[in-house]
Length: 147
Image (cartoon, rainbow, N blue to C red):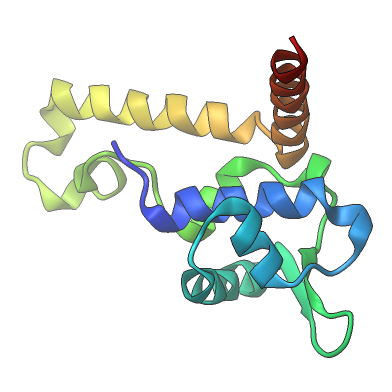
């Protein structure tokens, strides 16, 4: 299963906001620049995150976007649900009525297990976990630079 660009970019934006949250509201153009993402795309991407209460915006001088919740309380399954919807690889996993074989299909059981495994990983990972992983990678990169 592949996640959409919206989800891939959305998680990167949230990680960037978490890494820079001490700076207060961050202009979206700064996030776009750091993440090497199209600003126009990010402007559209922010709306569902605002509607879900994951980020907030502030207008005017000193305005920008910022996390509405603590990164340690924001699980990635919530983010993926907002941006992607279900992680089910096939429609029959979420809606058995789309296939007359659903109740007797061993393959559907496999797809359901896959969905559950993905949800477990996403639900057990917070934005703060990603922040810590990124900081470790940044330290490794810095160490490699000075060797």
